[in-house]
Length: 159
Ligand code: ZN
Image (tube, rainbow, N blue to C red):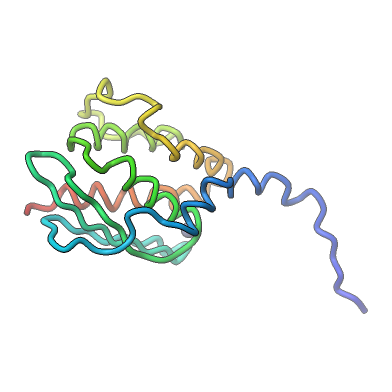
C-alpha cells in the first residue's frame, strides 16, 4: 500500500502567503540583534504558532532613534518584525502608533481610535504591504501582528 498522495489545488494560493519579499526579510532580517543601549524593551509570544519576538528601542524626544528585534518563529512573524523595524526607525512615536493602526486595518482590526491617522498613509507601510495576503489565513494574522503588539507594549512601559 502506498501513501503517495497527490495534493492538488488544495494548497493553491499559499504562494500569496509567502511572497518573495516576505522570504527575503525572513532569510536576511533587517535590524536583528541587540542595541548597545536602549531605554525600552518588550517581549511577545504567539503560543498558537510558537513565535517569539523581543524588541529593544532607543527613544529620544518622542522619536524612535533605533530599534532592533530578536526572536524565532515562522516566516510571517519574523519577516513582519524585520519590516516593522525598518519602517519604524526614525519615526516619531505618534506616526509609529498611526502606522500600527494602519497595519491592523489591513486585517480588519480596529486600532487605537485616539491616534491621528492623518500622520501616515499606505506608502508608509513599505514592504509590510506584502503581508496583506495573510488576511486570507485568519490563524496566521496573529503571526503578522506579533511584532506590532509587542511594539505597542514597549510604548506602554515607562522608561
Ligand atoms: Zn507564526
